Structures are given as C-alpha cells and as structure tokens.
Length: 90
Image (tube, rainbow, N blue to C red; front, side, top):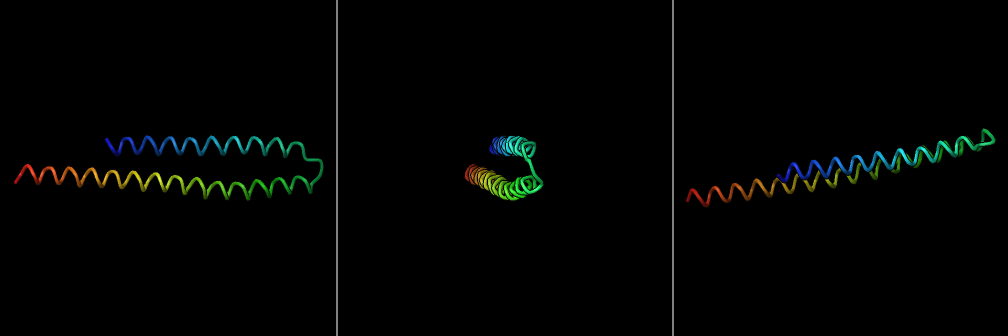
C-alpha cells in the first residue's frame, strides 16, 4: 500500500513537472516569435536554456525528495510488519 501510494505521488509530481515545463516552453515560443532581431532571439534562447537547466535541477530535486520519502515509508512498513511477525511468533 505504501509503495503504491508513493508511486502515485511520484507520478503526480512527474506529470506536474512536465506540465510546468510545457507551459514555460509555450511562453518562450511566444517570446521567440516576437523577436525582431538576431540579438533578441539569442537573448531569449539563452534565457530558455538557463531556465531549463534551473527547472530540471528543481524538478529532479523534488522527484528525489518524493522518492526518498517513498523509500522511507516502505522501510518503516516492512520493519513494522517484521516486528509484528516476531511478536506473534514469540
């Protein structure tokens, strides 16, 4: 159960991250289409690259946090079940 809930949470986080990236890319595409010079285009493109790197790190960090939380919950569940079995066996 804990693992299933965790995987659902991880999936939601991943979908949210992808949706945010798509939305940002649409805004940047709009900005690229409005460029009047090569200099403006390069500036917007550089900003896109910088933002993509930053958001990739942020998204990866969030996914790592969720993964760590899932692993910890699964570990606690397994430990609790093991403790319960030992108590019943005693």
